Structures are given as C-alpha cells and as structure tokens.
Length: 251
Ligand code: ADP
Ligand code: MG
Image (cartoon, rainbow, N blue to C red; front, side, top):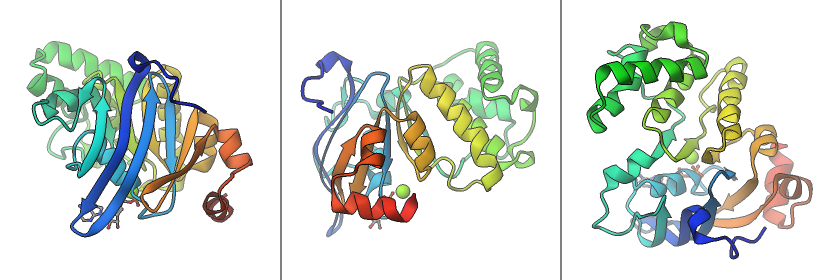
C-alpha cells in the first residue's frame, strides 16, 4: 500500500523519521507512518519493540527525541503547540483502565468535558448517558468502577475517551489485562467504533481481531516498522523473515 500519494488533507497522523531514546536506549529508530482519515491501523510486534512508546509519542505522553509527528493538523514537535489542545483531539485507552475510583461511572465520563471543555453538567451528563448506551452500560451510570467487571470497566474507559469527541482514538493493548471471557465484549465495542469511520491506531495481541478490523497492519520489531500491509497480505503472505518468525509464534 502506498502512502506517498495520499492527499495531505486526508492524513490524520503523520510520523516522519521518529526517533525516541530513553537515555542510551534507542527505542524508536526512525519510524515512518501515515494514517489516513477513517483508517484503522493495527500495530503488532514482539514485546519491547516500541509499540507503546510509538503510541505515547503521538499525543506527547513521551517527549520526542527527533523527527516529526503531526496529529490532526497539529505539529506535536512544535514547542508552541498547546499539547492539551492536541490531547483533546486524541482519545487514548490503556491496558489498565485508570478510572477514578471515587467517582461514579457517569462522573468519570463527564469529568473531561466539564473540566477541559467547560461543558455544562446537564449536557455532559446527557452525553455520558448516550455514550454508556453505546457501550451497552446505560444501567451502570451511577455505579462505582469497583463494582464493575474488567470488561465493563474497559467499556467505560472507552466511553470516557469518546466524551471529548476525539477525531482519533489510540488503543494500547486494551484487552490484554482482561479475563478471556471479557475480551469479546470490548473488541465488539472497538469494532463498532471502527465501523463508524473513526481513525484508530490499535496496538493489539489479538491477531484474529487485527485481521478482521484493520485496514492496515504494521509489524514493528526492534524500534522500526519491519513490514506493513493489508491484513490478508501481512498475515497470509508475510515477506520478511522476522514477520514470519513472529507470526509463527502467535498465530
Ligand atoms: P512494547 O509496547 O512494544 O512492548 P515499549 O514501547 O513499552 O514496547 O518499550 C520499548 C522499550 O522502551 C523497552 O526497552 C522499554 O524498557 C523502554 N521504555 C519504555 N518506556 C520507558 C521509560 N519511561 N523509561 C525508560 N525506558 C522505557
Ligand atoms: Mg506495550
């Protein structure tokens, strides 16, 4: 798949020669990646290859060592850019849900719109309930996170990320901490989101899911994009020895 011909106005995420080091540990060694509007990109690869670091560089949870990252039109590497403004455009869901335990489910979802967008509480609550409906948890609005299952917590975390109406959603192993019987319900919510045309980058170990949902799969190894392509191509006919080796262990 060629990304060089993509019109720049359709590109939601542009990563050019991204390097990221922690001290002397060079974790990202020149990543190039474009994500077009509405595209669903799954990032796979061995543990420690830099997948989480790449996602975290996209919304500047990590400082970038060198290279260029443009997200929703914002140059993340430009010190003049308001990073909080960028983060409002980019929702992120982590392996651990990080819900606020002392707040109800709906309060968790209302928090960012009220605090960051200065949305009125009534409107924020109405939106929270709509989002809970969407993730199948309308009846849990007043529950505390501690009373929910892992799958329910993660669905609340997705609703919370959506509350800011982001143009891009990032998922970092959103199902890895879940008991196996809860993985499906969370993947279903993510799949429905993909079907709405949301631009998404997902780091995942769920190869079957990646194959089904991704427009493109990016295989990372040792801080570089080793190979990428459409799922049928990458899973069915991988070209690089490292990709073949990785897939032989996980498929
Ligand atoms: P993956 O998500 O593919 O498993 P990570 O991006 O989490 O990989 O980690 C890649 C490398 O970066 C690892 O060697 C890890 O130890 C290192 N690393 C990640 N975050 C930090 C950090 N905050 N400080 C120091 N090293 C880190
Ligand atoms: Mg990771």
